[in-house]
Image (tube, rainbow, N blue to C red; front, side, top):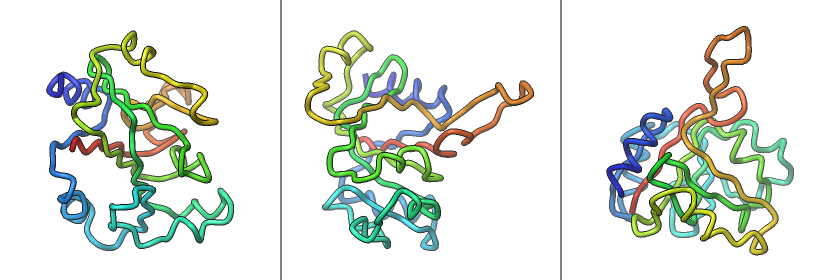
Length: 159
């Protein structure tokens, strides 16, 4: 299922990397260098240089280059990941960041959306969203635009 997930995410315009959890910071530096503004909503991920506690409103997110979040599970048939706003004060981060990096445990990948819906617990948070790849739209003069309604780049680290 991992290979199917990676291929599905790639078809949607995203990228997935199988790495050890302790390699996350090194991989981010390898991909993007050291000059990005990073916020992480994962306690053990020290790649951040912006403390999420200093963000007082969604407007403070406008200059964030990279947001690192956790996903409960992923779906191999379409490369989607399920994200909730647990421990995330402003859910706008899923849409306003330029690069969305999601940490997903490999064992939390399910085969299809039927299995995904069985895993959903909608009473556990106020907000949840399936994301598959970067934001895309072609309804603006029938021209493909990446990042119009969300991240320009979507990366999943499978740990």
